[in-house]
Image (cartoon, rainbow, N blue to C red; front, side, top):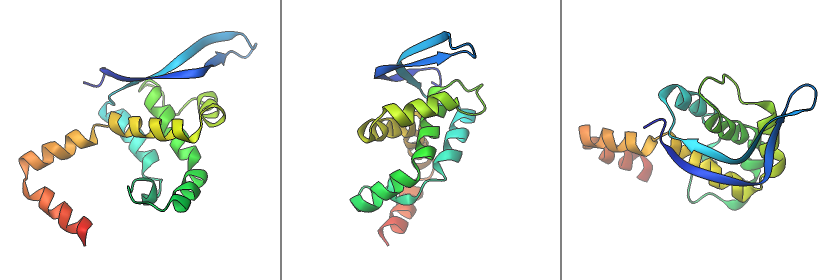
Length: 146
């Protein structure tokens, strides 16, 4: 499943990678997302764990949400870059992070943030846990409803 492509995000302006001489090495016209391997998911989750809860809540105050996005945009950009790049990459490409920061608007970031979350397969993991332990759903609902 990790190699399965599930989302393509077309870029209005291509991401161009240049070498030290300034020559074009590669040009990307769309970001392609695949389901994350466990190792890649761990890297992405490490970035996502730095984000405040307000970014994950459906009923967040819009002003608080905007403040959090502004304050943590670097972490969001890093998580997106991690999701785009191959697992062999230890850190996201600085040029890619800069490209994301300078060329994508907040609606693009929100869309890609959702795609990154989906690439982790967390919903599948939660569903599997519920199958194994049906009481898990009840315990989680009790905690979130209190």
